[in-house]
Length: 175
Length: 77
Image (cartoon, rainbow over all chains, first blue to last red; front, side):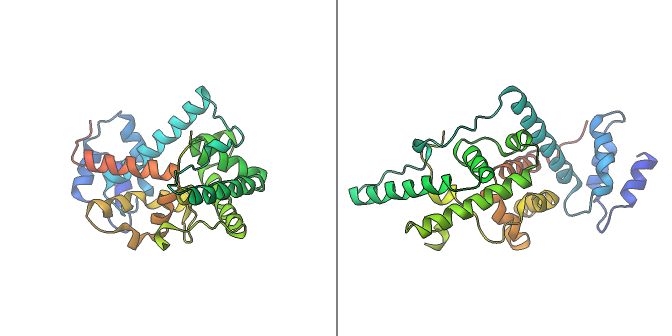
């Protein structure tokens, strides 16, 4: 193990990596990009998990980011305006239920139209058109967390609008 | 195209949602609790709520869980 690796490992707090994790780092070949990447990030390790799982996390984040960037460059997302047929359309057995469902969907469509431009854009793209959240973040020049906040607020507003219109959406775990 | 969906899922926005950034810091620990047969929601309730409704973090969580489960004993090259 290099002196730098020993130094970084010695700084890990509050829990030092277990012996198996240290061996994992030791076995990374010098010159292996993963070794350099692991060493660069090692001082952020806080011992909340095994070092290997922690390293997998960054690998997954890296892949997510690169896939989103690739997708955005090669297949710019479609953020078409709302199409009524895209709204939930669960089949209701009874005509009365069916009618109630249609009224709820009309109320939802109206509520979507009353969202702020940003909330509507994010909700339609992610919730209805299934644009990946990271792809939309790249296109809008922001990050996943900011987009998620827009999505969360849009959902909250839509629930409130539906409830005010007499069509509340009951939470499945509250039923 | 989202032609048929559960409306409740489409509009899921629960109180206590910790957001993406909070989850990024602890997803590895969250996954290890799952692999140990423990309930990560009892330790990280805000992230458990968040993972129900954020498609990006759901995908990352699934990827880390898969990697930790499949490759935990792999030796590095």
